[in-house]
Amino acid sequence: MTVKQAVGKVHLWLGLASGLVVFIVSLTGAIFVFQDEIRDLTEPWRKVEAQATAQLLPSRLQEAALVKHPEVKKATTWVTYFGPERSATVFFTDPAGTPTQVYLNPYTGRVLHEQNLRYHFFSIVQAIHMTLLLPEAVAKWVVGGSVIIFVVMLVTGLVLWWPKRKQERKQRLTIKWGARWRRVNYDLHNVLGFYAASIAAVLALTGLFMVFPGLLDSAVLVANGGREYPQEKDVAKVDTLQAVTAANQPVPDLVYRTVRRRSPQAEMVLIGPTGMGKAPAYCWAYQRTLHYYHRDDYAFHPVSGEVLQARFHTSKSNGGKLSDMNYDLHTGQILGLGGKIVAFLASLISASLPVTGTVLWWGRKQKSKKARKHPKPLVTR
Image 1 (cartoon, rainbow, N blue to C red):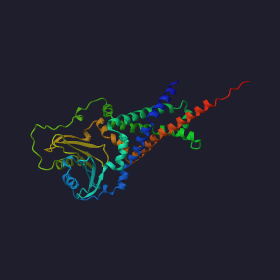
Image 2: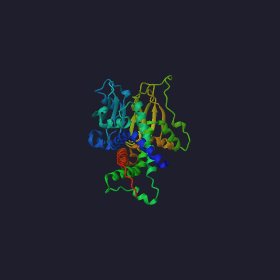
Image 3: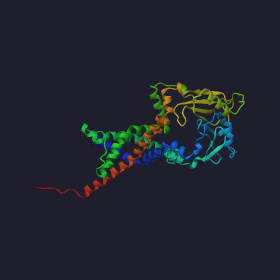
Image 4: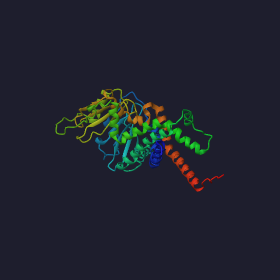
């Protein structure tokens, strides 16, 4: 058995083992890529008319959002400002475990819509994409393991695709649409797989970084040239033994005012729960709405509102910036609409590879059976 034949065997059996998971994950990923654009068209409550007045403080939005939910504590909610022409949201999970998102006009506090995210289409698509609706501990290895296999498949596929002679390259780069369907299927698998391989690898690796944080840490170390930045790993802590003076205003309001002052260019501001005094209150300020790469990170004392930690994008290492851009790389939105289109096409092609590969394997299997059943007669002279 030659090396290429051995690689072919590995490619075949790994593909059959992971094909179904790769198909589902890739297809749901393709659907999810344009979720913001689709939701902006189908959910009018996501947009508001910009006004010259300042947007309301978080405590006012929390109060308005929880009128129908008195059992939910303000300190457990997430408040997000998405910019001057978008509604603000208050997210919480009620005592029954229902994840709820309330959309409000940030200038008036009027509730525009309340959404149960458990049954939202894109929430379900995202859950399937990330876990296949399996328990998280199981999904980590089923989905993560299959994506690792997919990366290996991309490498072995390139080895199998690589032509021995230069004159064969043109043939390997085009699809013969006028040929028989088996040949077209073969070309779809090989040619499209080649064109999508590099983008598919980026999508797969960035997805693995979310599943296995240790892999992301390794990528960050490589991006930093092997240099460590301990300050970027420091976790803000609350000294519960130290007596502090309570803030003279709601902590979320103090957090919001501080972040608006220190990160004035931020379009999107996400304020986390203030907790019960034991954990810091976190806030993230993003330069662009619905983009998660360029961000400043804050941690506040949940009682006094004192700034415990402030980490600005401009001061982060290359590895830190790489970590921040991981989601935008995974969805393609790091390059705007064009990047999303590329990610969408690469995801569709990735979903097609297990299908065309299985058809290719099945056809060869049937051909082999026929050959064994009807052997060629011996010709004698």
